[in-house]
Length: 206
Image (cartoon, rainbow, N blue to C red; front, side):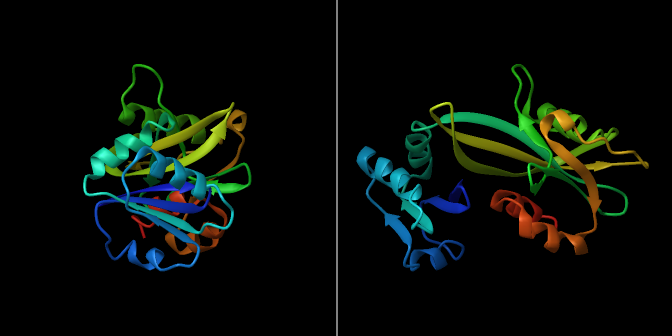
């Protein structure tokens, strides 16, 4: 098993073994590999992942949950949830936000469940109603700096469907310029201008 954390567009794999998904990164000239479980080693990996020259990181430890807890202590954790929404034509709901194609999601509010958050955010960001949550899909992780803090955003994604013809209303106050239903044949063009974590979610639908 592994957990993939994106530092900008670069993946860091936390794993308990090397599998077929990770192995190609293992031998890349600009990848860093660490198998020593210690606080200095974790600090070193995070530092290396922020260097421009590094392509990817692999940190292996026999106890993945122990490794995850040790890494999580280095970040301020923010939970978010969102949806991969399809309609009766099997089109996918995409949004265009701050120059990138994205999927609707947002931060978890106090007192709500992740499922409630996901449905609320989809409705708020796209104007969509009649949303039916089907199942959990995947959790993605990415890091960024904000107000002097090193943030790890944990985004929980859910498969959703909707019925009936509805007008979309992109949420301008969230810098969403467009909400669009996209045929699967049209996804490759949009994927040229999106985030790697969003590609990971969309690959589950292709």
